[in-house]
Every structure is written in C-alpha cells, then in structure tokens.
Length: 247
Length: 247
Image 1 (cartoon, rainbow over the protein chains, first blue to last red):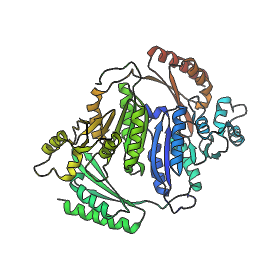
Image 2: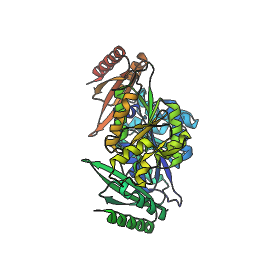
Image 3: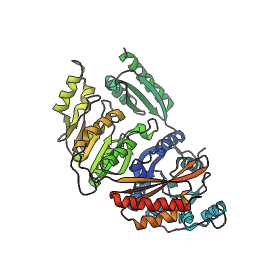
Image 4: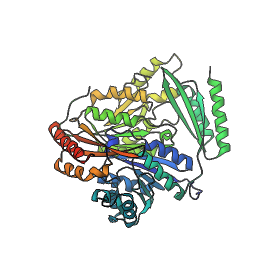
C-alpha cells in the first residue's frame, strides 16, 4: 500500500551508511531490495551511494541527494554504539538540534526491563528536532523522517519492516512496466537493430544485458515504459529482430 | 600482485553505471567484489555510487570522484549497444575526443571473423584520447584507464579479469588488518565499553554489527588497524569486555 499517486515521475536516492560495506566485511543486501521495492510502487530509484561512518561524508551526501530527488532513503548507523553516527549527521545536515525524543524514549523505556534503558540505549532515542518516527516492529528502536529523508536501520530485516511502515506515506508515480526478450546471441549481433528500435520508440527505455556463461554469450533485452501500448509495440519489434537474427 | 607501496593511505571510489541495477532487474555483484579486492591489496574504498545510463549523471559522478580519491574504478556501459554510453561520458568528463582507437581496433578485428567487425562492434573500440587499454581476457573488448579512472565492464567475470589486469599498476598503501570478536548479546549491552575502548585506541576503527536471527540479537565486533600491535591490544580489550558482560 502506498499513498497518493502523482502525475509526474517520482524519484528517489538510497544512501547506505557503513564502513563494513566499503571494507567488504558485510555484503550489502539493502540496495537490491530498495531497487525492487521502488520499482514495484512506482518510484524511480535514480541513484545509490555508499559512504563510510564519517560525519562530513554523510552530511554532504544527504544534502546533495535531498536537493535532487523527491525522496531519500538511508540505511545504517542508527544503533546504540559509538560508530552509529547517522542521527547526529542528519541533524547536522538539516541544521537542527539532536535531543532525546520523548516519543522514542517512551517506546524504548517500555521495551527494556526496569533500569535497563542505559545511556547507550538512550542514544537510539536521539532524534533530530522536527522529525517523525518510523516504526520498528522488529526491535523497537525507531527510524525517523525529516524533510524528504527517511532514515532506516541497516539490518535487512529491520530495514524491510521500516520500508513497509513508510510506504503508505509516500506519493508514487505511474509504474514503470517492463518486458524481457531473451536472445541466444551476443549483444553485438543485435546492437544496430536495438538502436533503431529505441529511436522508433522514444517513450521506452531499452536495455541490453549480456551474460557470460560457460564461455558463451547470451543477451537479455529489457524494454521499459510507463505506457502499456508503447511497451507492447516496442517489445514486438525487439522479438521480431531477435527472431530474424537467430540461427 | 600490485605495484609500488605508498607510505600514505591510498583511497578509491567505485562507480557502478547502469539502469538495470537501479531498477532492481540486476543485483549488483561488483561492489562487494571490489570492496574485498581493495581491502586485500591495501587500498581504502571510501565511497561507491550507482548511477543510471545518463551522460550528465556519469560525467558529474566521475568528476566529483576523481578529484577526491586516489583512484576511481567504474563498471558497466562499455558494450556495443546504444545504452552503452560510458566511453563517451568519460571522454566528456575529461574534455577529450572519443575516436576509434587503432590498438582496440586491432584487438577486435582479429577476434571477429572477416567482415564481422560491424559498426556496432566498432563502438567497443572507441576510446577517449590519451587513455591506456585494460586487457579483457574473457571477451577481448578492452577497458581503459585515463588519468586516475579505470573503466571496466559490468559483467562480473569480465570485470574481475580486468581488475586482475589493473592491480599490478596500482600504488597501494599499508594494509588494513582486522580481527573479529563475536558477542552473544545485543550490541546495546556492550556499547559503552566499546566506546571507551575506541577512545583508548585511536589508531583503530572499531565497528559493531548487530545481527538478527530467529528473534535473537548477536553482535560482531570488528577491530581494524594498520598497526598489528595496536590491533592486538584493542582486540584483547574487546574480548575481555565481551567475557565480562557474557552470561
């Protein structure tokens, strides 16, 4: 479920925050999830970035991305440890104070046993002033939304739950539809035909994706459009070109 | 095998180029590979970005990243089809012409049967002026290096072969070493101790990574340093803190 639908294209960027992704220690699983999610609800993911746990890098990325896209989503760095610096970086990017948030304190206080809401855990209740909380059904510590920026946890199961909580609040655009045509040939054989088909159908985005397996190259041709008739016409042309060039 | 070793830290950014990653159609496998590779040869991967097949986006990302880091690596968009626009975008970013390169023409001409080096395939021989070629052992069409930017294919097996070809030419820094301590507890329990240990060992980077599985939270604590003695001392402190807080 999502919120209202816009006539225009709605865009988004995704910012992954964390040294562990850049060192290779952890393999990111969130970009692919967010990419699929955005496509499924009619938002165009236009850019993704991964930055380290460094305040200036986070601030600069947030300010560049939030000025450019309808929405920004982030993952990582909102936990209780010293290397979790996303909340303070977001507050700095927006130029607002970061204080203990009474709503977040109430959520977390009731989650822990009496006396166990320690100073470290209280770090997770620091929310930039003016932000709304994002529910965390998995482990309670909330994410938050400020301006067009949605701040989520890095653990995939929590991030996914938070995305489900955010989705109903998002304005979405007309969904991009796609068709795929498989060609049992290297893409260089069909390249000229595809270029002509792309020119003939300017309302589509035609992508050609080579695949190497066991020393043989095949090609997946993906045709995308927001208009179903246009999509089907272009797909028919691609399929015909593949048939003519096969064998 | 890599090239000479620098005393300073050597940094890199990785730029993934391709609509198919941002739409979710293809799940990126190159970022994790490059992250591991850089760590293993002593280069700090400081940033990764994914941009669509749009000239201005590629140009802007390349110019931002090449000014900031020792090296930039890219993957994607150097094939023969109309949506492969990386070579022309890189030429534009560097303000140099993009012409058929005699070395690349020779490589590809000998690879294809007589008469099969078609105009589409000739696209793969367009190389920005002043660039050096990067060998492609898998499918011949070369990558290239211009300034500090290394342009590679998007197909993982080809990208990996190109990275092996590039590695001996790279100046690398002192390797970041790491130790991991597993803690059978949520990270909030050990957060205050970790913060104090981080403060006591400023030459380390201590990361805390929660993991949710079957409703239970455990924590991996990763200690990183370029100095082995410092690494071992900090790791000992972390292990002791975990032992004291366990049970």
